Length: 268
Image 1 (spheres, rainbow, N blue to C red):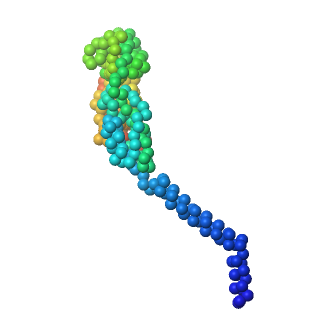
Image 2: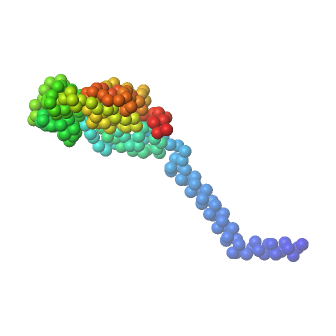
């Protein structure tokens, strides 16, 4: 028995074994210290939910960001005619995302000064050509007003705020232009597109491309700003694609949502 104890003590007194034991203890201790420090530095499990800054002024966004423990910075600006000047248009990361304390949120704001563009001459163009020309100038197609004419979808007049607007006139970027177009009674039928699943502006384009007007627009309560509306998806329309032939210029009403549940139902 004494001989066994002597051998055990001999092994433990061996400097190689001692060094191995101390090395293991050191590595384990270092791992614990690094884990603790990493948790403190990265603030593990202490993420902040990013507020939704859209439609706020920069000062409002900065105040709310400071209260949340993050920062905001303007990275870009655009001009959106239907938004309040200087308001936050989009942000990255978006509202509801989780970030670490001190993270900088990049904001795109609506320009404070409106941009003006030259009104083109659209008379004599086809409706589709006129629509493309408006888009290239940063203008939007409004209503298609059909009147009797020998040529269907030939642009006869161009209107802004219900008044005729001459080519060369300076107008705000984003202005809505209505077109008076011809309609031959022998060539006046079209069909509603299937706009379900399309985002707001793409759905409007699809309706116009079929020589129809957008009627009632109904956004769900989750859509609270213009930037929200750009991401909203059509989940219902009337009349639908299966409704049969329609007279050009008829209206199609659209219901839009950002609710993921309603959007997922469209693919079933």
